[in-house]
Image (tube, rainbow, N blue to C red; front, side, top):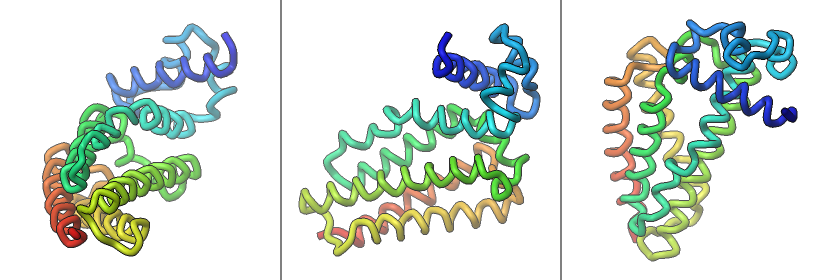
Length: 198
């Protein structure tokens, strides 16, 4: 098995175990045992569990882009943004057992997680900008800068999330709180997109 395929196998095994048992209850030994490899081999690719966790987050994000991109079929930018928000919520529900571990780690102190979150932000920004650009091209929307509009909307979404996080006292809230947050994000998206209407 080549290095890339072994790394991929480790990520898949970790994803499966993290999804089923949760990250906190999974050990590196269990992942190594699942793959019938030595613990040393596992540590060759991932020096610690946090490093592996960050790689799994990026892996699930990379492999789930097809579902997230379902918004591309929509011609109405307002609907496209709603579809994107729904698909993002679907992603959170699908991988909730993996994502909820974020409540237990200090994201700001982990270089690996910071890099992963920076990538997530760039992808969200690119998606929102793409939706706005498509709306401008079709004549539905009008803005001088789709990048500035996308940055502003993403900052507003992050502000909503920060308020929810502060109120719940957890970095990663429960599913009920996420559904409430999604509803508020969709309301904000509607107001924002109608404000850009041509």
